[in-house]
Amino acid sequence: MALIIDKELCTGCGSCVDECPFEAMELKDGLARPNDQCTLCGACVDACPEKAITLEEVQRASDERAASHRGVWVFAEQRGGRMPEVVGELLGQGRRLADDLGASLSAVLLGHQVEGLAAELMALGADAVYLADHPGLALFDDDAYCRVLAAAIQQYKPEVFLAGATSLGRSLIPRVATAVSTGLTADCTGLAIDLERRLLLQTRPAFGGNIMATIICPQARPQMATVRPRVMKKGPHEPGRQGELIRLEPPAGLTPATQVLEVVESLEEKINLTGADVIVCGGRGLGKPEGFDLVRQLAEALGGVVGATRGAVDSGWIGHAHQVGQTGRTVAPKLYVALGVSGAVQHLVGMQSSDHIVAVNTDPNAPIFKVATYGIVGDLYEVVPAMLGRLKELRG
Image (cartoon, rainbow, N blue to C red; front, side, top):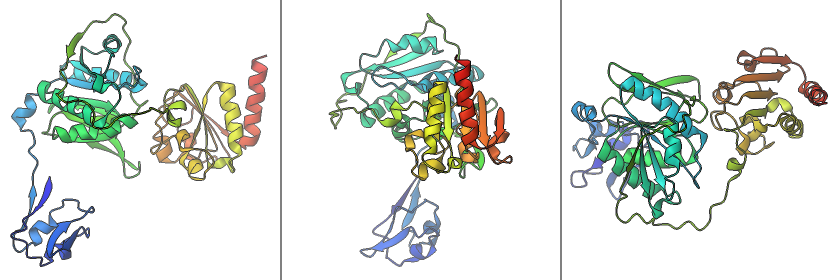
C-alpha cells in the first residue's frame, strides 16, 4: 500500500495536515506530502476536499492464485559452508507443517561450492533441495540473495516459506517478502496449520511480550515467517536419506554491486549462546559488575557459557552479546542457571524452553521460580561458592 498525492489537484490547503492523527502530513513548496511518521491510515484521503490523495493497493494473491501455491520451503542459511542449528529446527517444524498440509518439504540453499550440504539437508527431512551455486553467492549479499530467492519463489510457488530470525535472516527475508508482494511475520515462537483454510498460524510475542499474537496471511503467498532459534525441536537425523536436487539458474548480472573486502567474526558469533548446552545467567540481583566473576566461575565449572539479563547489560556490567531474552538471544540449553534473575516476561520468553532451570534468588516470590525446575531462596554469594565447592568434591 502506498500514499499517492496528485500534484495537479493538490492546492496546499492543509486539510490533510490538520486531520492527520499522527502528525505525518506536512506542506512543502505549497504541496502536501507525508513524512516518516505516516502509517497509511487513510485519514488524509477522506480529509482532502480536492480528492488529490489516494491509497494505492498492492496487488495481492486471489484465492485462486493462492490455491496454486503448494509446498513448504525452508531457507538453509549458511556461511562458510556451515549451517546454524536453526536450519535443522526449521526442517523439523517444516516436516510437521508439510505433513499437516499433505505437501512436500524443501530446503533452499544458496552459495558457492556448497552442494555437499544438500545431503545433510535431506538427512534432516528435506524431500528436495533447491540449489543455487554461483561465485556471486559465495559471500552473503542482500541484493543478490534476494534476487535469487524471489525468482525461485515466483517460479516454483511454495505455499509456506520459513527462515531463521538470525542476523542474516532478519536482513534478507523482509526484502524477499517485499519482492514477491507477500506478508511476513518476524520472530515467531510458534507455528501451526489451520487445516480448514490451509493457513499458517504464526505466533509471536507482542506489546513488549505481554501478549502472544497469532497472525495469518489469508491471500498473499507464500506465507512467510522468520523463527527464533532454539524454540522449535529438530526432527530426526536420517543419514543416507534420499531426496531430489533441483538446480536454480541464478539471474543474469548477479555480481554484487558492493565488494566484501574482509569478513570479521563478531563477538556474538564467538559467544555461542544459542548452541550452548549449559548457560549460567546473571541478573541485576548480582548487585555489582564484579558479580559476573562468580557467574564465569560457575559457567567454567559446568562447561557452559555466560548469559545476562537486559538489566545487567543496560547497567554496563557485561556486553550485549551475552543478553538472553526478547531483545537478546532465545536459548534452550539442557541446563540454565539463573543467578539474581527476577524473571521478567521479556527474559522468560528467551529461556523458558530450557530442559532444566535452576534459579537462585533472595525473593521467594520472584517470577523466575514459576518456570524453574529447582529454586533456591538465598544469597547467591553464599549459594554459588557452595555449588563450586560441591562440584570440586564430585570431581575428586
